[in-house]
Image 1 (cartoon, rainbow, N blue to C red):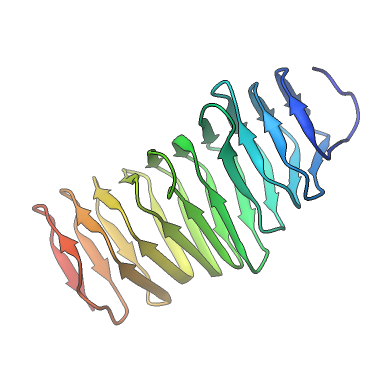
Image 2: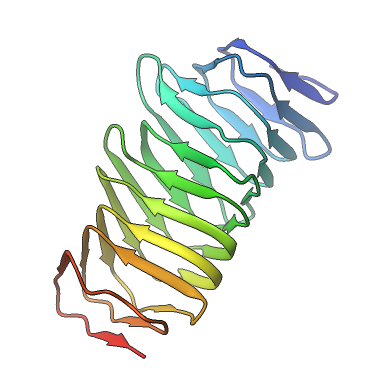
Length: 219
C-alpha cells in the first residue's frame, strides 16, 4: 500500500504492508477498534490519538522515526499477537495522562528512545512478552510499568534518565550494569536478576525477589 500524502486510520482492517514515508504523517484516531494484519513501517510520524490496535497474522510495527502517543490507547490481538521494533532512529513518546498498554506483543525491541512524559506506559499483562532493551528509557514525570508475563532484558547500551516511576512486576534480567538516577522511583513487585550491578539513587523498599551475582547498591 502506497499513499503519497498524509493518512488517517479511523477503523477497519489494514491488511497490506504499509510504509509511512519520511515526509508523511499517519494519524490514528476515533475510538473504533483498528485491525492490523500486515506489517507497518514508520519512517515519518505516527500520531496515535485514540483506538485499540488489534493484531492478526503476526504483524510487525517498525518505528524508524516519531511515534507520538497522545491518548489512552492499547494493543491487543484479534487472532495472533504482534511485534514492535523501535529501531536506533526511532522515538516513541507518551504524553497523555492515562495508561497506554502494549499487550499481546510477543517481542518488543527498543534500540532507540522511549520517552515517558506523562501517564503510564505498560508492557505485557496479557500473553507472553520478551522486551529487549539496548536504547534509552527517558523519564519526564511519566511512568513505565513492566507487567506480568514479561521478560525484560536490560542489555548493553541501555540507559535510564530523568525523573519518574519504573515498576517491575515481572522479570528484569540485568545483563549489564543499571544506574537509576535520584529522580527515579523504582518499585519491584517481581524479580530482578542477572550479572549486572543495580544502583539506585533514591529511597527504595526491598521486596519481592532479587537474584543473581550482580551487586545491589542503594545510595
